[in-house]
Length: 352
Image (cartoon, rainbow, N blue to C red; front, side, top):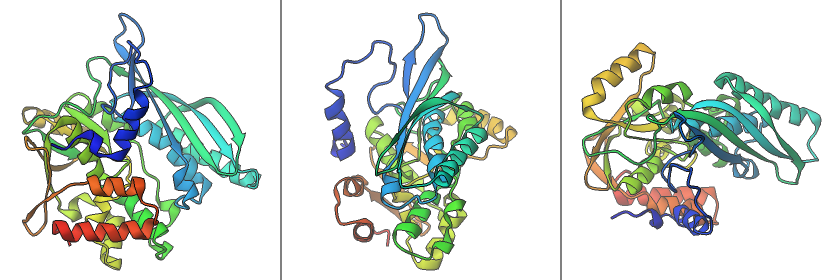
């Protein structure tokens, strides 16, 4: 059995929530969905979807240096959570801590990133709060509505369901590797990292999916979390040229990084990982194609709770993401040391 508590982050969250009284109006349970779902009226046909997300560590660790990126990701990360429950977005409120040493141009570029992301999604900033601090932080709280009969959670997949992802992955991890490993930044300029929340796709997926979660923590970590919640496994076909973002694929080939790194790192993007019952597959694919949506089929749900990747060589390899997930939560030796540990586990699993 692979339990949620085996992951340090899940264990920490559980140790917190036991102090809080649970609202009788809340639909989802802890860990079960990307956004919180709340009943807003006794006879209402919609749930209120609410989420909160912050951009802090990415700034303090030097991953994001352009204030436009900071603002863009603060918005997209919140609305990606809403997309993962199938919500129609309403708006966002923001709490921002500015570094007083930064000038007006810095603040204006951050605001431009926020505005551009909101315009892309078609939402508005309703308001918020500003403060000053030595460390820059951006926290957003986004709101949406989802039909009572069509909300999605992370729980519900069944053996035989087909696993999809809404688009190619690895872009976030490729950018992180180039930036934090000190590689040639011309390989992936920061202004090329503009991940999108899959709002439109979420509205379609909610009609068919048995579970859904966004890939903001990376593809393999997302699958691992779904595995632990559902106690079901995933058989995933790793045809890297098919599932990796072209930038990630090129960077791996150019500098010799194993392709699996781009699926296993913690800095993902905002694609949706979801499962569709086999009997619903023809209808789902027909509607997706009609709307210009081309999801990527990854594999299939299995009864045994394990993550098995089928490599291009044809070999099946079972991997356990717990040591890598807990590595990022506890490791104090920096990014490069974590990458060394990735190589260790990759060799142990037979991925390298």
